[in-house]
Image (cartoon, rainbow, N blue to C red; front, side, top):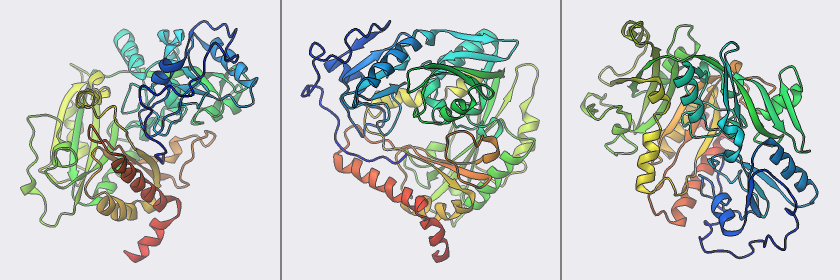
Length: 468
């Protein structure tokens, strides 16, 4: 997602041009089960997102009571030639997708159906509201039934409908596909204000369009997601590489082998003692240490970390032999292996402590000019030389994720746009700022994102290959 800074955030006391609900006829006699927030309250709820790069004043925020309320809002908007509607999950969009300028923002988290997480043990699936958080789905399914969805995102405080409208990618994607691949049925409110239940065999065109459709084909109000038995424990491991070709060789080996880890991701980090971007970002425990004296003498400005995890059960499995067998195939730097054991729930919730620390320092509320993109396998070496080793050699003050995915795990009927080759890489620049960034600092990050994105979209990576 290419971010572009168009204006600073709206000040808290800026109430200019806030529509007066008493004078506005748009929402009169709407008769929803939920509630409607106007004015300053609506601005507070619906004018910002996690990206923090845009701010749009809504006419109102609809705290919907259910799918019928969504229908009423959509149909009322259809009566106006200019009124827009945006569905907002947990507000984790980057470029203002969950906002509506003088329009209606539907707060999907407020849906009453979100509290209904119905597990069918016989069918091994769960029915859940589109505004429910994945973190709540995890807790309910694991604690009550010992079951869990197959595919996840790294951060779980996102809504079900929100991630399914994108794809939902994490370290399990190489095996099960993105979260969209684990859905068997959807309830969708269309742009015509109709509630339609769809699947791969019933109203299938809508089903596949909505999955990965960025909300452009309808609003997901319910999803049926496949489950599997949840393990008790996870062995979480990080190993380090100095050479990109060895890092990609091992990552690609793991995602194409029948016998592999249950989770495979990777990231780039700075070859320095920088506490955020450097060596310390690899450690999994405060008792671990990164000794740079063991690095090869000719090491570049960045290093690479392969992150893997193996599931196991208490009193039944010993992960040691399998871990050693799988790691024995890899070419990582032998002095740089870090691992811990933790519960399955704690592993999937591993980003929570990052959020807690970021909120405590104030940087969770500052702008986040993130960039997420897919890069073809044939271009990833050049991307490494041009972007990782040069443009981003000092880091982004946050994770630089990169790991391979398999196109065959994605359904080509989804709305998601992918590279043509079977193997491609996810690249995610998860930038954080300091507590009080200036406008010029944010603009500089956005400009760097634009530069990086242009290398891919304009084919400059391939052209640069010949010159490097």
